[in-house]
Image 1 (cartoon, rainbow, N blue to C red):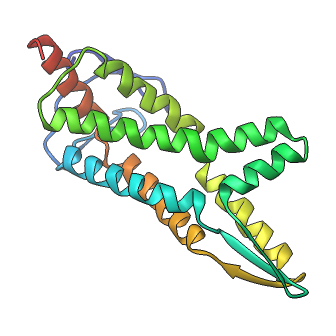
Image 2 (image 1 turned 135 degrees about the vertical axis):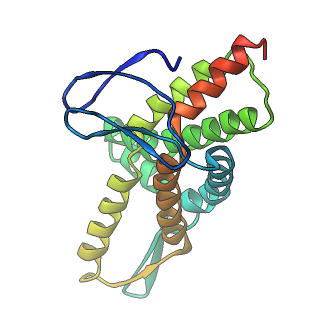
Length: 205
């Protein structure tokens, strides 16, 4: 696998993939774009972050994100209740996109990172491991936690003039979940993952 050519995403130059020392980067000789990095403890870090993300996932989507008190009445909303509200209002397409981008895709991404890194950590190489790691990339393109967080912040600004707005534990969990997802993207050494998967499958698992 190290002998394959890879294309630079910036200038499309074909570069032969070579092993790099731990903590070092492989850069495109033409434009200097970072092609891949050798990250230390990538399996352990990815697995730990994925487990932490799964723990935070339940409070992030089920606990109140915002509470609005207006004329003595208090209403608490969660991410799931927001999806239901869109469905009830007839916005089925938008509700489906919000459900996919803020719940389904991030959750499956965490599951896949946890499973793949756990298998590699235990030197267990089932035949479907390659397919699961490809799915991780596909779900990574669909996650929209940052977009949903921006929508929550905009709603807070608009609602603050109507009544008393209180931030719930769900929002704190959601922000922590967003940060963990960003950290996972930086901790997964894809070159190392693919090499381990190929070597394990070539050796018969």
